[in-house]
Image (cartoon, rainbow, N blue to C red; front, side, top):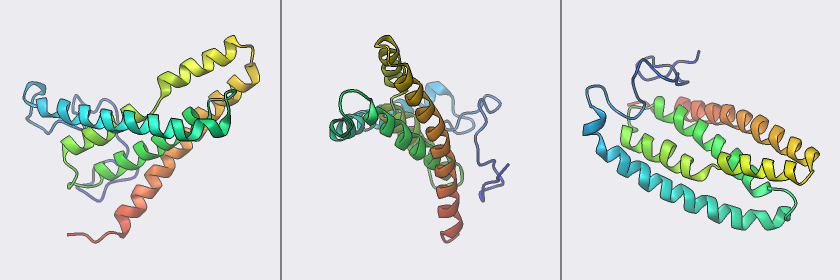
Length: 164
């Protein structure tokens, strides 16, 4: 497993991590971390608006027969989440609140796997089995590759930045 340059922490988070959270510092209870909810809400709003804007911009290029905008959002959201988690875990400068805003908030509001499920079901119900299968394989396969690409980008970024 890759190790973070910060205190030898694992670069890939394990869920759950012995009851610990990526967002709540040690010694802070969930009842005292109410600000996390505010940060997540702000990130979710920004992610949702971004998803809408990207969808409106991209879907006309794919036409009504294939949910290409949703596919693009899932892939770019997975890339972003991979990058953000790797970079946030590799740096002590990213606060728990900012991790929550960017990952759970923004990426959660931006990515659309619930829409992915609906779009797949709609293709199947419409008898478009080949398109549904293509959509599932591309969404899952390319999104997994995108997460690893995000890990690599974050690793390269952390490697090349000056250390304090």
